[in-house]
Image (cartoon, rainbow, N blue to C red; front, side):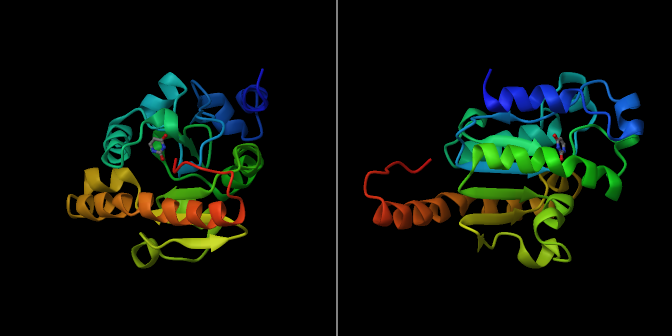
Amino acid sequence: MSALGELYSEIESCELCEGLARTRNKVVPGEGADTAKIVFIGEAPGFHENQQGRPFVGQAGQFLDQLLSSIGLKRDDVYICNVIKCRPPENRDPLPAEIANCQRWLDRQLELISPQMIVTLGRFSLAKFFPGEIISKIHGKERNRDGVVYFPMYHPAAALHQQSLRQTIEGDMLKIPSILAQVNAVEEESNPQQLSMF
Ligand code: URA
């Protein structure tokens, strides 16, 4: 079993959040390429994700698939997960204690995948990496930290509730290829053996 597969087994048996462990149907660790250069991090599983054990498979997920395809990518080319791995009942916001309990899993996922770029989807994901920042101010602007490019975006579900955000989200997504191309150009300069954009 791969290191990520072993991690999934651990996540699936997690009972740190007693309430979520009791009410969940399936744990949703995440999915995608274990060598992905881009990791997308959402908030928490919703109804459909909790049924299927897979991230972003509901309406917001369909929009995320469209966004990926707008830059020539499929789900298998990237890695998709959430800040917390179990569905909060009635889709309430994740609690600070739940986010803190789940931090270990997200940290280990990122350690194993070691992506070049982390795309945060929505305010909970943004707050994990840039606490206190406001999404309306910093969405669509990349930041470098410790050799990783962070790229905050609105959550795809925001476009479902607020039509005016749809174009903003689509426009932000279209910036990703050139940001990644820049990162790769810098890496290729320091290591000419390394090629390929995604
Ligand atoms: N919203 C999220 O943040 N994550 C999912 O997996 C689905 C919807």
